[in-house]
Image (cartoon, rainbow, N blue to C red; front, top):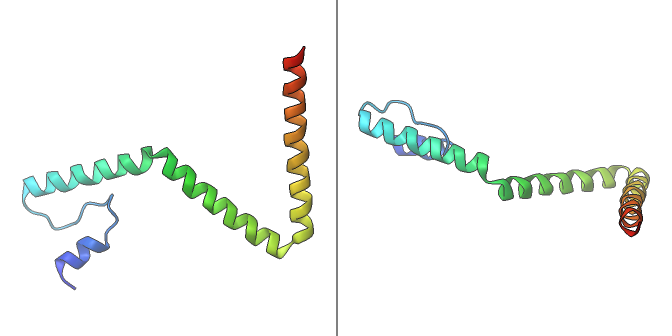
Amino acid sequence: MTNSDIVTSLPKTAVPAGIVDPVQSARAELKAALAAIEVKGNFPRRIDKASKRAAAEARVFADRNPAAAIAAAVGVAAVVGGAVWAIARALSR
């Protein structure tokens, strides 16, 4: 395993060990810090990943227990419908 293999296997928010040149070390730390800020601050990407994860978990739940999945869907629909009704009623007054 070469040094370039080690660097490519690190996450982009990690600083590789063994850098002795202070300039290269500072650049690596800056690059890792900027990558961490981008990962943490990119809300659309985080929301997309969370929604995909939730959809996959819902599919697994529905496959394992279809009756409970139907009951959950009916419950969610009732809650959303009730909220829409309450908002519409409040706006119409």
